Amino acid sequence: MDQDPVKMCLLCLSPDASPQMWRAAVWELGDLRDRRATAAVIKALEYPDWECRHYAIMSLGKLEDPAAIGPLQALLSGDYLTPDDDDPAGPLPPNLAAHLVEDIQQALARIRAPGTYPDHPQRDPA
Image 1 (spheres, helix red, strand yellow):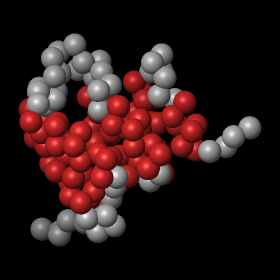
Image 2 (cartoon, helix red, strand yellow):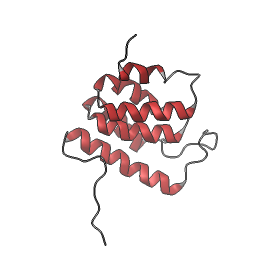
Image 3 (tube, rainbow, N blue to C red):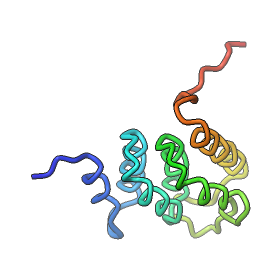
């Protein structure tokens, strides 16, 4: 039996899988940092659950694959940040939309300068 973690996560991205399964798989694919996952994580940007899409944005930053630059830039110019109320995760709150813009910009910065951004930047204690 093939124990390849990327392939195992990709199997979890089936149309009949739950949003929770998609979120977990997309997140793990980013943590694995294997560019074989890039196309599937880009596809997850279209998944009908904004939490999964948010995880996809962060995972694409971790993958640092230049192939994700175009799809991420497109998110900033489309209606991606104003989904309708039919989203399984619920309506997108305005403060989350602003946070998503920051995460998209961070992902783009990581891709353009691989290896220079930590996963969780430390903030100065105030």
